[in-house]
Image (cartoon, rainbow, N blue to C red; front, side, top):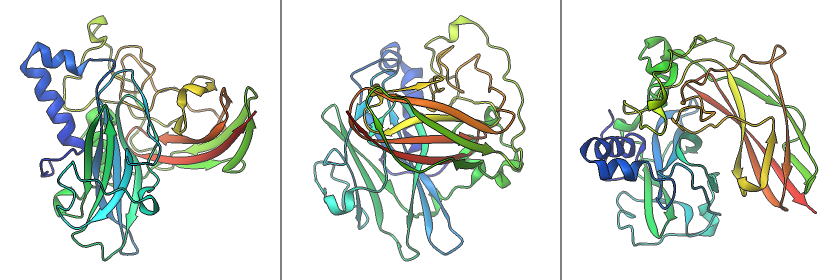
Length: 324
């Protein structure tokens, strides 16, 4: 486990929830609340790039089971690059519009959304901190990206922390590579309210690692709304693909066919890879995933396609301008 300060990080936030659940019935009630809870940003770790720069991974934990948030780039959702400890005081505001947008989401789904996006920092980043500030329900939370050695990760660490390959710790996962993903058509598109927009991608898993295998049998209906019994929920291996709304009001966009959830909803029959008795569907024979999306409201949307082998992720954004 990586060492952390008194800050929200991937494992820190999940461990805190697990401990609260184990200590009291009231804590379990809070853990299972559908609405009214906060969302916390998470720094997931970093690894070196071949050119000498570094890649930082971020995600978040929405502690609600159903409530979702839309937070545009603003004093409620921004990044800052600061000296160590400069933003430890949560009451201090450091919003600068010119530096606030680092590609983070503005729509926040429920539950854990791990390793959702990356930011490359320069080789001379040094001891600086890349800080993500989120404000929900009147509360400020921050994730502090740092190149301290305790936070260095590799593909096996990512797999372990998302419960990939049913929680396997196999050393073979250290050499796992993410799926290949290619969008058909342009990444900037326009659409009209109420008219379907076609989406198609091709995805493959060249190394077939981890190898697809079926989920163990469910233990019964007692798993409905039950917190995971381990630190992280587990997910089966196998190539899969799903569209999400990364920026824009997700409630105003509907997909056909319905896309499975890409966040860790562990409730039984929740249409989530982390939910029993979900089985990873077989990929299309031609490796081509086709869907349509219809928007109910004009605006600027970013759709994010997520391909996963159950352990690592590959992303593809489509920017859509929706008019009447």
